[in-house]
Length: 131
Image (cartoon, rainbow, N blue to C red; front, side, top):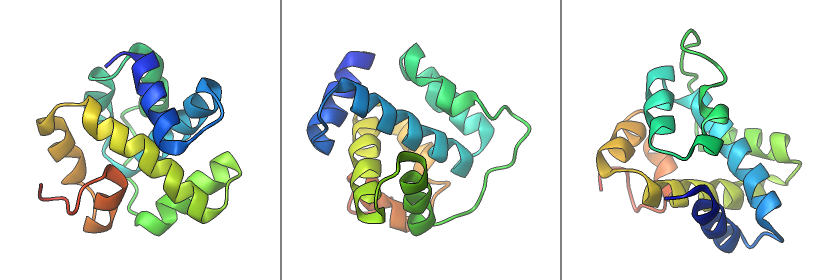
């Protein structure tokens, strides 16, 4: 999926004013996701995405360990990064991650979700992470 297509889908799902807002939310969510999954997995994910989407996923480098936090903390971090309320941040995360689920291979999606607790499923637009 091209970058502009990805942003158009995020914009539609998140009901954002413009592509710029969709791009800012996307970068914030991807950066936080990169802290939650292993650096190698973040690089594998970045390789399946358009060049413009890669920096938030790879900025931390390979040396940092994956952090362990649940959905509530994920959304709190999105809220802190974007200035949104927690409920809005959950909406934002879902707009990006459900689009991400559509944009990458099923194998890559399985690799990512295997590193996350089941509570993340709803953010990816899945009933559970075993699908």
